[in-house]
Image (cartoon, rainbow, N blue to C red; front, side, top):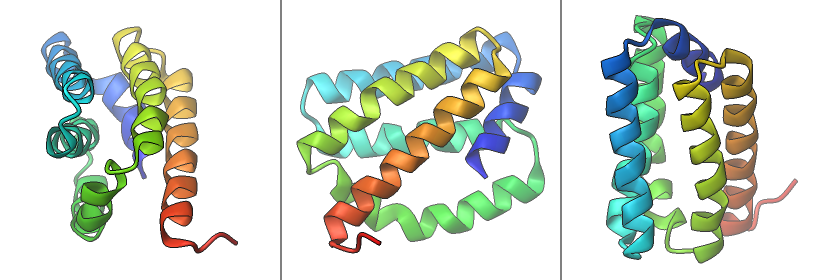
Amino acid sequence: LEPLALRLTIQRSSDADILQLARTHEKFMTAIELHDVAGIAKYDEKFHSQIVEKSQNKLLISIFRKVSECAQAFRSKTFLVDQNIKNAIEPHSNIMDAIKNRNVDAGERYMRKHLDQVLIDLEEMTGQKE
């Protein structure tokens, strides 16, 4: 879902859209520096939401909103674990760089890698490794 949304976002975003994503990313990084767990969760959710919204794909947006509602509890708890915060820094920065450079393939690759790590983090938090 998000890798496809990112691909479309990179293709369809205006310079103003990219600037808005960059500002959200900066707020995410600032929240990390301040150890503001609520802020980290807020700007993580906002960054991912903006990526999907800027895809301009109504079906992807609708599905993402439904999934996002279910993931709200996970998102608020995941950043209580310091390693999970560290696991998000590089992927978010790489994704943002790919957006700025309008590099569709790199962006999609970074998003997939990020989501794979999120799944690992979730499995470790819940003790449900396969």
